[in-house]
View 1 (cartoon, rainbow, N blue to C red):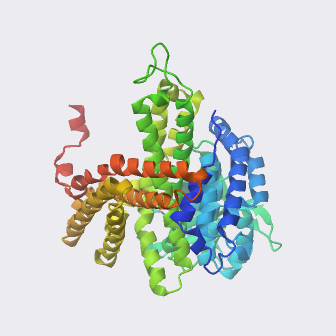
View 2: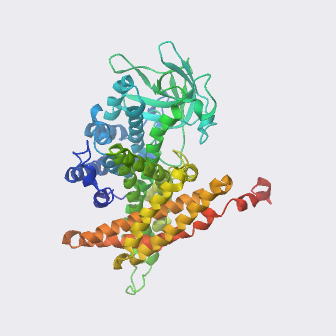
View 3: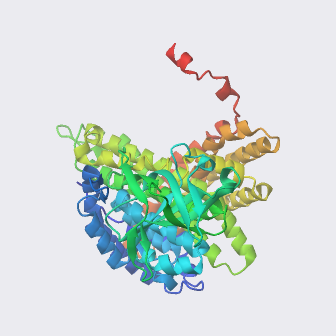
Amino acid sequence: MSVYQPPLRDIDFVLEHIVDLESLSKLDGYQQADPATVNYLLEEAGRFFAEVVAPLNTVGDAEGSVLTSEGTVRTPTGFKEAYQRLVEAGWQGISLPGEWGGGGMPQVVGFAVDEMMISSSLAFSLCATLTAGSVHMLSMHGSPEQQHIFLEKLISGEWSGTMNLTEPHAGSDVGALNTKAVPQPDGSYLITGTKIFITWGDHDMADNIIHTVLARIPGGPPGTKGISLFIVPKRLVGPDGKPGELNDIRTVSLEHKLGIHGSPTCILSYGENGGAVGYLVGPEHGGMARMFTMMNAARIAVGQGGLAVAERAYQKALEFSWQRRQGRAVGAPAGEQSLIVEHPDIRRMLATMKAQIEAMRALLFYCVASVDRAYHAESEEERTAKQELVALLTPVAKAWCSDLGVEIASQGIQVHGGMGFVEETGAAQFFRDSRISPIYEGTNGIQAIDLVIRKLPMRSGGVVKDFLAEVMATATEASSVDQLRTAGEQLQQSVQSLGRASMALGASLAKGAYKDALAGAYPYMTMFGTVVGGWLMVRSAQAALSRIGASSADDEWLRQKVTTARFYCEHLLPQANSLECPASGGADLLYELDLTPEMAAN
């Protein structure tokens, strides 16, 4: 099995040249995040995850989490011990609020740590990812009392958090949920209902589990406007702040899944014996807005899952390509087999994987750094601009990156050939694990709809227009540089194509042709992500060119950075142009097709 190598050099490059960590560290509250300190932290984090967590990835896949006869969940061998070491080291809280015991680092620094944790084991990492979401939600919306009781323990990792939205009949249609919350004289609520697909809904790694649950208070309005948000602990917290008696929550079963076997995905039953005690967060019927605090962060994290698993799949495929010999490459001496990495088609797949991974990393880090800058903006105008940018890019970051994660994991299997189809080589696990990312935290179809229906019309299209103008400025600048002329010109063409698709979809929305707009949403999202990736790869190449010659030790790596960007723009970015027609072509053919079961049977 391959050994995980944290991609510290590329992470450092993105932090320096895409994020501009140096200027970020000058913002109020982030002074401790100077580049030297951050580089040291990331080296230590990378070592921890490579040595402690990564070896558990195959163990978790083989054993899975198990629901015992006592009704509790047992995690795979080594998970509990690794989690305790994680808590002791504090990596899960490095960017969480300092006033409650977190590291107080910028979100993007914690994001860099998280990438390495997820690459080490997606299944293991999800526990900490969801807990961080609970912390963000409570930090913004919890009462002072709730913050006092829960935040310190969640940030330390002694307690973990979950997110409970889905019910058997209410998946993407969250407004159809019917879990009930009945108010009690002491201000608490009794929760009854069933939640499904609850990631890390029960386990043996933390002393308590704090569920955030969407439910309805009787008498509220229908749909999403009648949903409230509640904190429902697995164990009720006593006056001394310690977990006490069990709440009325039962783990009914664990799902048997395609991947992420080590992560227990639970069906939870609330209130079989009268009602689980819960505490309202925010006002009645204000649950969806508050839950979106968790969901938006979780969506970017899911996109990061696509990146992180893809990185691991690429490393494994690259290693295999330098071990496996098959056939004779063009120009190779007769009489001996060549390493498969010498064959052009294998190099094409590896180059595609590498370029897409670097584009994904740049987009995700850029998006999270924009969250940091919005938090610490010096003016309301700057804050609004960054918030608009994050709103625009979040569905793209989630959907495009998670889609590519699946594609890259599949390419990794292809590089292995028949050996990739055999579980023992390990390549298949990355594909199985990555396949959940386009589905959960809002399917990628939902993300595409969000991009077109909600984000494209922001400021009457002005947010997209301003963003594309910035991308075009970079393309124009690059096209005047010899080494980047072709890349810059291709980026110009792709921006123009994306602009036309944006106008066509905007016109459909303006005249109420929603079927046409929705039919084009997915190709538009893919197109948008591909172009943004091209923009950030060009920016990376510009930064690399400016540094060549500054240190001979870095020159070859920087030249490879430029070559990777050129490959992306000259070989992958042109695919964006081909999506203009399906993005703007309307829905007529979709509904002209007879997609009935009867037609399929003939």
